[in-house]
Length: 453
Image 1 (cartoon, rainbow, N blue to C red):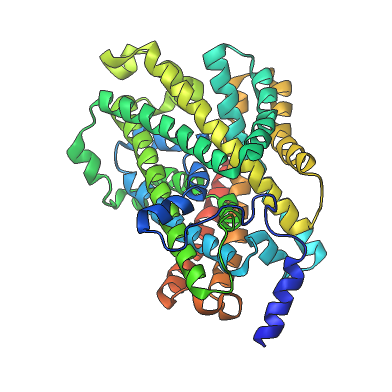
Image 2 (cartoon, one colour):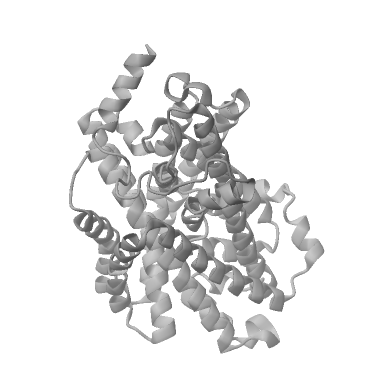
């Protein structure tokens, strides 16, 4: 039975490893100490963490603070803990099966189902990319006064940056992304320190309060924070990036070590993402509390930071410009990872063998197209373009269960994972999270549709 299973796996794996140009390309030390080994495995977690602090998170986090002060910090914490568990499972799936989540799903479905899954997932990636593209384009407009349409078109060339970094080596991409994350962290730490938050209230905010469940407005925003934090595309990407390290797959000890250190890498980086999302919410609470109705867009936040009537004596153009720089850094990071995820799902679900440059141009083009159409129709009005963020959440809400349910099934199946199957407590918790998030996302879909009509 095991031989047949192994044969079935190899037949499918022969279609090509996930992200073939970087799969198993990075050496890891055999008998090094903890720190040196952790450094060798560090990198994929940074690319994953990007999805948990992308521009789509900014509006919901800052709005959460400006509307309800520190109350929703407990939701930021809960979302981060859920993310850590899901990403660990995704990384483990990739290491053990040597296939990413899309390949594992496609191996157990027919061609028509594979196409349907690709379309749904691609729409979710496009929905995610909308926030990144808009964030980058608005940042370019705010910093360099570049027209919005031109800024959107410039983001298409992000794919050229990705291809250049790929030529230099995947570790260069990891370092580049980590550097941009550091920029975001420094900017918001500086702004939060200036805002002088109420520390006792801040730490109290990490404890759940009944008002989150009983207040409809708080609950809706809490759902928005969860929806903007737990991203389905990250599960596909992490299951591919976890395979970039070169390990001996015939040695269970090597596999166990890889799972352990990939987990460390993921949790460290997601902890940093949690800190940044907390900073965003704290910034909203300490600077913008009472002004939530006027802060629904990136442009509003930019101008608010230099408005003394809103933020007081610390208002300055420098704060606004730092915000725009961080927004550009976040957008650039997210477009790089979004393009890579597009490759993973296209190859995994469709088994397409296209030239590398063409795959990246297609995935980037699909993401940019709806934003370009919106800019042309509405004449470059930021309010209309940023309104796309609201509607994009519908696709994310649909796609999340489609990725979470198979992930939980596969990692809990001994036939798939062998000795690396989820512990019983993790399986129960994973199913509980999957069911709850599916129900919450269904509610978010209904509320979004109601807001449209």
